[in-house]
Image 1 (tube, rainbow, N blue to C red):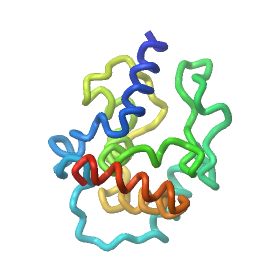
Image 2: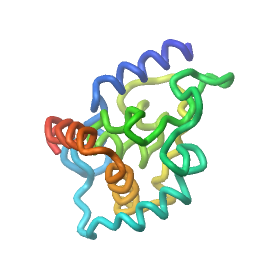
Image 3: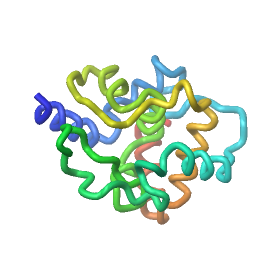
Image 4: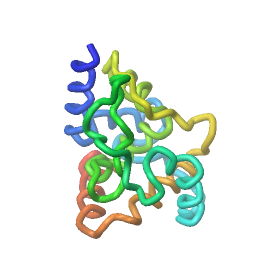
Amino acid sequence: MRGKAAALLVAALAAGGAWWGLGGAQLGAAPGAMPAIAAPIDLARGAALYGEYCAACHGAALEGQPDWRSPGPDGRLPAPPHDETGHTWHHDDATLFAYTKLGGTAALAAQGVDGFDSGMPGFEAVLSDAEVRDVLEYIKSTWPARERAAQAARTEAAGG
């Protein structure tokens, strides 16, 4: 079952926004967009929060865990890199927001993908929407122009 669930996850990730609806009905934003947040983007806060909540798994330099494309002994995929070598930039803002806010398993389950056990926790009870947005904006700020443009195009195509 884990192999099938992993294949479903890869298919969902490859779709580059297959869960865009999470940004709408579940989290109160328009499809393809993060929720409207009045506070200005704070990259320094995003970097600090990334260091506090994300770096232990995704690496201080956003490098991810070794062999991140291959499930470990527990069937879970290791934490992917958030730099340009990973797949984070392949996803629109709403997908990234939902995955961070709800966690991997819950974000996928909300879209009908059952049986996938993600190691990505949800930060809904820990970080505000503005803090999640700041972390994501910090991550995006580290990408080369090509990856930033590709991710922005995916967000726009998804309605964001």
